[in-house]
Length: 499
Image 1: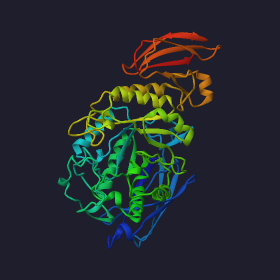
Image 2: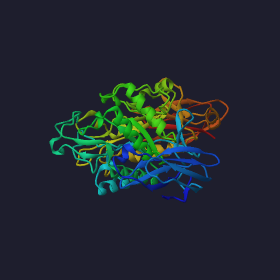
Image 3: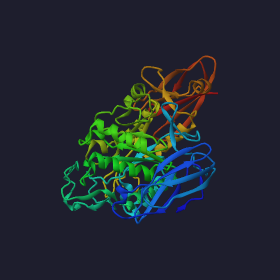
Image 4: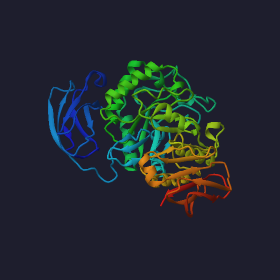
């Protein structure tokens, strides 16, 4: 047995043991470990990693000494040991949790505001393209990225991935071309997979990519299923689905920056019913001992986000309904798809950067969080393969993120002011009263002036924010009801704070 003798809090403890490789170790053998410290007691399932090696991973939540005992039918030997847990390193705030009902924070209490992007199969590209993607992310405002475990077959997604999740042989990728716009081939004729034998190298590579994201402070929003398939992964049997989920949970859940997205556009996966999704959710809930964030993403019909296993709403819509969704579901609203900045032929991928930025600000001021995507014509689309960001929105998203992080901690909520304006204030009523923070956003409207009135007792500073040109202009101090002259331009915000 080999194992880590010391690990930081919310880091990954890993032990590996030699065992039998006879038969099918993935389905016929098992390994688990029981971890005990003064404050924590968990039993964690491990996995077969190929080559006669079995592993268990564990994420400790306390700075204590842990003892562990290994069991299972993988070997005739018995194993036990102990390890110490040290303080977390700089930048390690633990996994993200729901906080203040509609928002998020890391386990150590540090606020987390999701500023996400979509890049479906970036991690299944060449080493060179992956390195380019990570460099782009390093210089971007994004702290969350959505991507798939399974490869994707869709418009602008005709190439074969670098690897496959199971042992077997894929159908000839040359049979698929851009005329097959929607990419659905659920019969997947020609594929030959053993759905009870994983390809450990495929999962090991994804783990390395998740670790690279972790170094950049980026959450990995892992899409477990999707409909855009020509290999047969979207039409596995219920037993095969569950087998895959248990393996994915055993491999990934000890990484603190993991989120579970059960599906991209769940309602396009016609082989699964709502009962199926509920059953699959139960598998992850039982298999993930750390309770990572969980969501399911829609195409047309919203899933019932009131279901207790869903921690936050992952939405494909424009942001106008954000305030209503907050009231309806009582959970954080993350609009992972608001359409994408780009110029491809489809309406979902050719909105202007100004429109995308408008949607980000509107989602923010309605108490939710928007998501980015980029689809400019070229060999590699960011939305699918990654590479370099070409658009004008990321710099403006970074500017918005700075404004958000300067607001009182804990997130913003919508507040009814004048009937024709959008206003956000701190979610916490005490902070709202103490700070007097009000953020108004006017989008495509271009008022030459507005009247404001917060209260009659306190003095307030006012600033005009140009969300497109990324400027902040201080315009003075005011008390009672006051008028501000505005620049008669689109995409203007006004920030008012108590002095």
